[in-house]
Length: 114
Image (cartoon, rainbow, N blue to C red; front, side, top):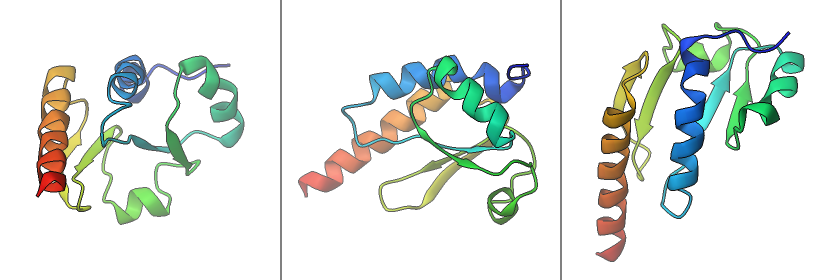
């Protein structure tokens, strides 16, 4: 049994490509996973995911509760100062998320020059 096809999993190929494109930038992707450890471990390498993912094993664990995750996927864009700049419930679409990430990267680079 592999991963069930869900909106979160449908985003994985785009996320893999995004992480690869942004590897030289001040950017990190971090996941929170609601799968069982056994299922996640089996599928992690096959999916091409290279980013850290906190294991919850449930959709109602401490991280989803503290971060007010009401649906999966929920995406937070966090700037270089740790401030939440955007929250998306459901896929925001490849073009939208990449555009927002590029803005945050440009801001981080500009702040570093100052």
